[in-house]
Image 1 (tube, rainbow, N blue to C red):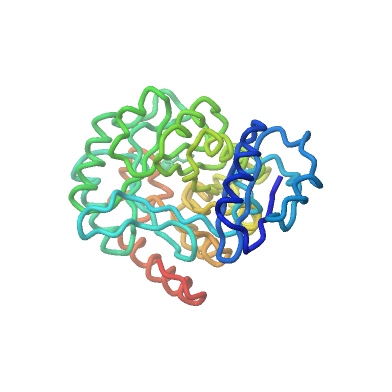
Image 2 (cartoon, rainbow, N blue to C red; image 1 turned 30 degrees about the vertical axis):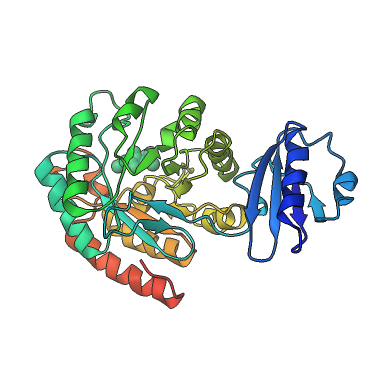
Length: 343
Ligand code: PEP
Ligand code: MN
């Protein structure tokens, strides 16, 4: 349920109103816009009488939100959520995801060595990437495939962060790994864990931004419900990621659901990032999908980049070389600029 307050509502009346709602066991989500304040009510609102709320002199309107996702719903928070990433080190501005820019995230599928990672990190930074990606704990279909360097890989990622100043994003596969993620800037929840509800509740308990990838066969509404799990547990810094879904057609690794971008942007205030690499599975197609995603309104792109794709331990066929990434970044900057956005 949403309560829109009158622009002239005074703070002490708002506080009393919120106190009355909280006393009824409801969760409160307050969103202050330029001219008005919106109060989102979460919990069992079935027993709340809309007319009795309308009777308060500070209340302008009361609406029921039918969708099961409340905190992720744009109705609860009409303005875009902008997520600040990276602990602002002296002289360093945090990277902002959402609200107009098209942020580039790039790096290898898996961290393989310090040399590999730092080389790629420096190259993607020079090309315009604002955030470095790299997997240390890898969800692989086969138990015999490279599983990632684990803790050692995370240490390499943090060393690359220190060297380049780029904030980092990496995947968390299990609650037990969380203690190693203190200096990680964005925690990635991978497609295979999108509905690992215990994991979602756990990352909801920390304040770090969460990059939540859409499950291989999940609907956009299920993606929003998973975001809701994280938000309901206390962490509102959720970034949604469309990374392709399974379809009947097998000519690409997955099928990029471009329509999900405007839909998610309409339904939710959360930023939407697109991963074209896992969507198509082949590097030559990545630029086309990345351009489509920016044109469709994505708040950023996450691509896999490898210095030697042919020898990559994971996902080499879909990895751009640093030169290809630089070329793509220049094109995306032009695409974004058409709409007055920057990368
Ligand atoms: C990844 O980003 O490295 C990854 C494994 O992605 P997904 O969870 O989308 O398959
Ligand atoms: Mn990968």
